[in-house]
Each structure stands twice: as C-alpha cells, then as structure tokens.
Image 1: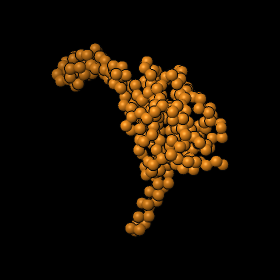
Image 2: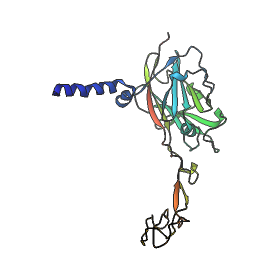
Image 3: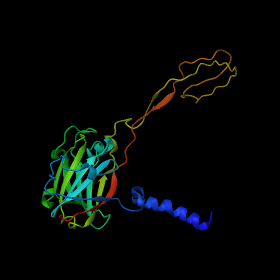
Image 4: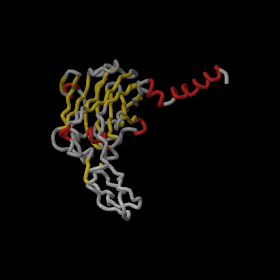
Length: 272
C-alpha cells in the first residue's frame, strides 16, 4: 500500500467523524435551534405546547427553545430521575439558567432556590411557591424576576417529570430574532447534609464458606482473612459449607450524581 493511499484512508474516517453528531460534540458547541412562537407556547408549567422532537438531552435534562419578536422561551425538563432530583432540590441544590450573547460568561442568570422542606426525588406536585427566583450575575443578585420582566413557572410534564418554563425579554439577553446566544445550565454542589447515611454506599455482615475441612487434605486456607467471604480449604475431613467468620459484602447502591453544568448555543429565528 502506498503512502498516499494510507493517508487517504486515514482522512476518510476522520472526515466521517467530523460530519457526524458525535464529531460536532467533540469539536464544537452543540446548537439548539429555536422555533418561532406563534402564541402557541404559554408559560404555564405544562409542556403540551412544546414539540418533544425539538429538544436536546444532556446531563439528565431535556432543553427546548422558542422565540418571537420580543421574548425568548426556554423549557427545561428532567430527562431522568437524577435530573428530577437535582431540579427538585432533593440534594439542596440551586439551579441557574445563564444567558450570554457573547459566549461563556456568567453575566446574566435566573437562579432558583428550593424553599426548605424535604423534597422527593420525583415530586408529585410543584408550584412557584416551591422556589425562590432571583436574577443574578457571577457576583450575586441583580433583582427580582418581576422587575426584569421575566416569566417563570415550574410544573410536571407529560411523563410526570419536573420542568421549568421561562419567558425572557430578548433585550435582557442582548439578542434579536435571527441572532444567537449561549445558554448555560448549572446546579450547585450537592449539600452533604441532604444525603441520608449510607445513601450511596452501605456495607453489611455477610455469610461465607469456612468449614475447616477439605478433600485436599492440606492445612492451608484460601480466603480473604478476617472479615472476608470465608471460602476455606483445610485439614483432613470432608469438604463443607457453613457460616463464615463475619464476612462483609458491599450492597449495590445508587451512583452519586455529579452537579449539572453544560452550555448550548441557541440560534433564534426570524418571523416567517
């Protein structure tokens, strides 16, 4: 095989990768196309007016966007149980939606803090009273949603998963129809006090095989020592199985979720 042919064969798979969605994720920000809102979308905490096919799923969230001449509409839905738990405050986390027409700065955001209580991993009901909403930048609070003209409503979607709907003036995002902006989605660190003891790992006494008799007739033992599983092969006698010396097994437990943080580039549309 000639050197030129080898080079050509090398670049063909690379070109295919770059053209694929996976390649786009590796070499550039994922883009979320907005849809024109012809008064169909209402910020009411329900997702029946959103097209599921227009969502992008990432890190346990499903995100959709729309716009008209004046507002940007964003729907953030929990795509799995971990996403629902983090949005619902099960780990005492806040959620912030960041808007930036210029890139990745945290210049303007909507921060939601869950109000006390002990929320469930998948809440059965939700209302605006469940959250304290504040407009923030990277340095702290800027004002209220009302003073900024922002609409917000939490709710439960078709699959009974938590969702947030936002209506944000385009002027606040410094963008116009046909333009683009970056949206950031962030939950704060998990509060350790919200984790019940042993929630993500738990050991308990086990049972092993430890009768000191074996058909092999050697006084050795194969096992994990004190507190092990106790599989033993030892001196003269018949092989047997019995209670071990208090082995410990680790029960399979839920994997602790990482805090959510990702960005999507949103391309706004002009009026058809």
